[in-house]
Amino acid sequence: MSTPSSPRPSRPWGTLGAGAAAVAACAVCCAGPLLALLGGIGVTSAIGSLWMPALAMLAVAAGLGVLLAVRRRRSAACRTVPATADLGMPTIGPDTDHTP
Image (tube, rainbow, N blue to C red):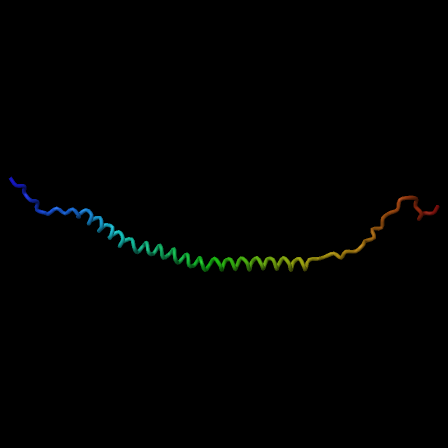
C-alpha cells in the first residue's frame, strides 16, 4: 500500500521565512521613528555643545561684573582718616577751679 501524497509539498523554511519577513517589516516600520529619535538626540547634543560654552562665558562675565561692582562700591564708601583725638580726661583730686 502506498501513502497518499499531500497536496502541498513540505516547506521546512516556511517558519524561518515568516520570521525573517516579520523582522524586515519591523525594521522598515520602526526605522523612521528610531532615526528621528537619534537625530533629535544629535541635534540636542549639537545645540548643547554650542550652548554650554555660551553659558560658561555668560557666567564668567556675570562674575566679573559682580566683582567690579563690589570694588567700586568699596572705593566709594566713607572712610575715616587716622588721627589722634583729645578725649579731655578728667583729673582726680581736689578742685582747683573753685576758690573759697
